[in-house]
Length: 129
Image 1 (cartoon, rainbow, N blue to C red):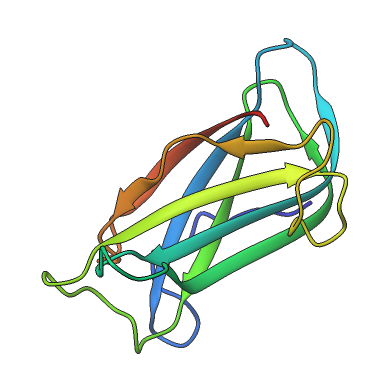
Image 2 (image 1 turned 90 degrees about the vertical axis):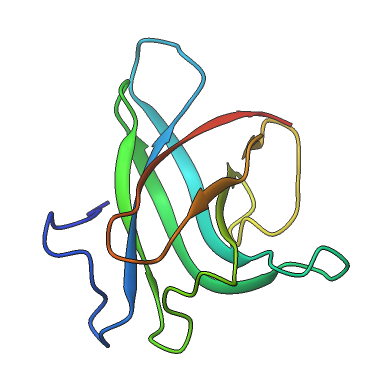
């Protein structure tokens, strides 16, 4: 897997780029996971379902003991807006599209807030379902 390139925090289309470090439960060893899905969601409306505004799906991911970093691009139409709230979530597991939970799958247990202003560098700890 090739994660982020360490470049600027803007996406190719001029939108936002969120740097996410995904960590797994501590085994002290590298782990291989069939898929990892990281999403950026708009959670502004408390009475509505979160809207996915960006995602990155990786397959056959080798995760070192300290975790792995990747970038998620969010289109320019989303951008920073003080009236809107965005969070990052992740899930990992055997399902090729990481859309359904199964035995041994991992999820982030905290929705981490991001601003989409180019300064977002967050860590998500994944835990067993």
